[in-house]
Structures are given as C-alpha cells and as structure tokens.
Image (cartoon, rainbow, N blue to C red; front, side, top):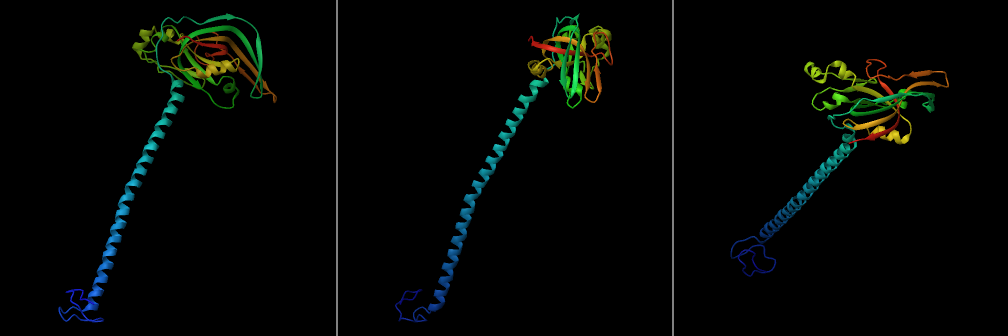
Amino acid sequence: MRCPNCHEQLPDNTDFCYHCGTFINSYNTTSSDTVSNNNSVTSSLFNMSTSVESFPVRKKRFVLNQKLLVILSVCFVIILLLMFVPKIGIRRGISGIGEPVQEETTGYTEIDVGGYEVSIYKLYTYEIEALVVHTKNYYGTGLDKKLAPKDVALAWGDVAKYNDTINFHWRQGQRRCYWRLNAHDLDYIGGIGYAASHFSNNHLIASNKSVKRKIKKLKKGDHVVITGFLVNIDAENESGKSYIWDTSTSRDDEGDGACELIYVTDVKWLD
C-alpha cells in the first residue's frame, strides 16, 4: 500500500507512515467525510438548480393565467355592451316632424292575458311620426305590465328638433314621463305649453308577436312611425276582479290619464 499523503510504499495494514508521519486511518476518515460533504454540496447545488429552473415555469404559468383572465373579462364586457348599449340609444334632434294623426273609429278586440278576458275598444285610428326620447320597461305580474310591458316617450315639432341642444332631462317611472327645463330654454322652445303638447308618454300594446318584437327594439334616438289605435281597456278575470285602463285622446292634457294607450299594428324606422 502507499501513503495517501506522501505516496511512499508502505507495508500492508500499516496505520502509520514512517516517512511523513501521517496516520493512515485518520486520513481515510477525513477523506471520506470530505467526499461525503462534497456529495452533500453537489446534491444541494443540484436541488437549487432544479428549484431555480422550475420557478420561472410556475411564474410563466401564473402570468399566462392572468392574461387569460384579462382576455375573458374584456370579452365579457364587450358582450354586455353589444347586448345593452344598442338598447340604450343616443340623444339627438330631428326637425320637420309633424303632428300625430287620429281619426274616429269603432270596433273592439278580445284577448286573454294573465287570467283576464280583455276587451280592447278602439276609439281612434292613430299614426304618429316621432323621435323616441326615452323608454321604460316594466316587469311584474300585473295586467298592465303583461299588456304593455314597455312605455315609450315620443316627441315631435320643435321639442324633437331641439332635443339635442336642449336638455329636457327626460325620465320615466310609475307609468309617467317626467321632464324639466331651465327658464331660458322654455323661452327658446316656445314656452311650457308648447313643450307639454309636443311630447307624449305612450303605453304600447302589441297586436301580434311580430309587432311585439319591434316594440322591444325601440330605443332612445329612433325616428319612427307607430301605427295603430287609441284604445280603452276593460278586463275581468274568473273571480270577478275587473280592470279598466283608458287612453288620452288629446295631446294637450296633462297629469293622470294624459298618456296614450296604443294598440300597435306596426312600427317603422325612418332613419
């Protein structure tokens, strides 16, 4: 055997080198520990290397998930905009719209709605060209909401003409249409009397499914012609409960009963 330190030839099973003074067993133990320590360091370095390489992969995956979430969120917002924004419409003005036309008539139609037998009495044929300045949907189980789930505020004359330059602050609720103007705007539009007689809140009853779909599409800013009848409603259910709903027949009235109840036979968009 040779001395592990000075490499001199020694007898087998010698514990001590006579040339350099090295204890053979002590050196082997130290070398073994050194090798073991080196292996431990190598293993740690390997683990560190594995950890360092795997961390960017998890980070990239997290970033990818974030980007996917953002893309899905943007798509969801776009879908919502496509669904609802067209129904909201725009504020604009249209000039040259004349007065509504009505002619006295007779007749009635019977339909069953919400457990009621409804008689629709036709008082006048009615055609109105107008600018839609506001709309309001009504939801619920009441007969009025089933008969006319959508109210449409319509304007014509100078109210329609100046609707884009004068803010009428249109709003609807409780089956009414509300508006307000500044004093100088009232003078500009021709006074409160003119303004009040050149718009109307309208309860729309569809005569068939095709007309019902058209009514649903109506939105602020539409220039339309609505054709049908001004009607009164008389209804009764099996338990004897009655319901009456009458139309206005004049554009000059105000307050309760001033809204037009229209049995709509057609809706046309002009531009």
